Length: 237
Image 1 (tube, rainbow, N blue to C red):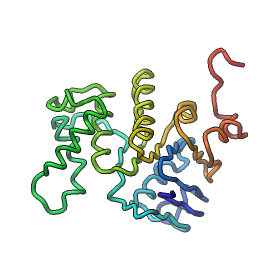
Image 2 (image 1 turned 90 degrees about the horizontal axis):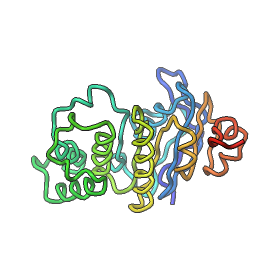
Image 3 (image 1 turned 90 degrees about the vertical axis):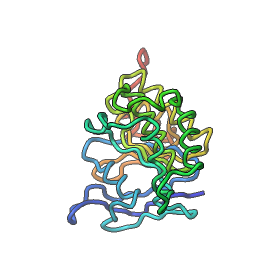
Image 4 (image 1 turned 60 degrees about the vertical axis):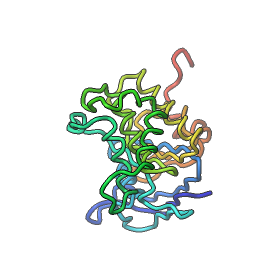
C-alpha cells in the first residue's frame, strides 16, 4: 500500500527550484535509496518528505493515515553532534518525545520501546556509556535506534554512513536492510554510494537537476543511467 506519493513536485527556496519534476510512490515495506550528484536536490527533497519544506508546485501526499510525527528521521551527523554530552540511553529515549504529548516523564512504554530498539541495534550493553565516547559506527547505531523510537512505519535516513570506514559502512547497510525486512519498516535513504544502494535497496530514485530515474533496483541496474554510474565489480569486465 502507498505510504508517500510525490507527483510532479518542484522543491526549492525563495522561488528557485532545486529539485524539479519529482515523481515516485513509496509503498509499505519498500527500501528506497535516493542517489545523485551533490547539489541535485536530495536533501531538499528529504525536507519536503518530512513536511519541513512545501513544494513550489506539485504535491507530496502521505497515505494510509501516516503522519509526519510518525516518521523517524536520521539527519546527516554534524561534528558538533558527535560530542553530545549524554548517555546512550538518554539519546535513544529522546526519540519518544513526539509521543509524550504534555507528559513530564517518560512512560514505561517509552522505556520499553527504547530498550527494544537498543537490543535490536546491538547497543543495549552501551546504554550507560557516554555518547561522545563511542566510535562513529556505534554513534550511528545509537542515532538509528533513536529514530526507531519515533516510528513503527517509516525511517528517513540522510547519508547515515557518511564518514564511516568500509567495514562499518557495509555492516550498517546490512542492519538497515534487516530492519526493513524483519520489522516491516519502510525506508527512504539518501546515499552517495550507488553500488551499495543497488545491492541493498528495493528501489532507486536518481536525482539530477530534474528527476532522472525511478524504479526497482534491478530496473536501474540495466538502465542507461544505471550502467553509466554503477562501478563494475572488482575483477569484472
